[in-house]
Length: 173
Image 1 (cartoon, rainbow, N blue to C red):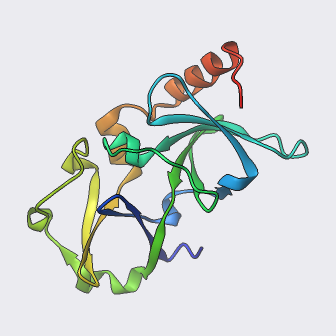
Image 2 (cartoon, one colour):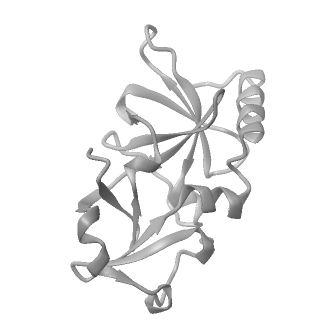
């Protein structure tokens, strides 16, 4: 996916956007084993199925983080990785991609947050970078830095601790 566009995905009746330039490479869910972290419905563990490429880590399911149910994963989903520090990476699960908006088209489609009548139940407005009104859809552009500040979930030490706890519990994929 080009980094000069916004990826729009849907969780129930809400549309969210992320900018791939905020993240590193994306992993295809169908190439990973996924298991619950045991800590929260929003925090999951992934591990590569490829023994030649032993990637593993923690990722967030945005729908669960924002209080949307049911939580599901599609084989078409992707986990976008965000490097928190040199030793720690956190992923963000994205599924149900509906469209891609070129960044140069954004300026004429921005709208104030006050025009959004309904937000997901557990999404604080501070975690929203911008609201994009595009093709009669209001898209909430998520800011990963603000999201981490609001939820205090994405601190590198917390991710490392979750991984350590996950390994101690001997997860079953």
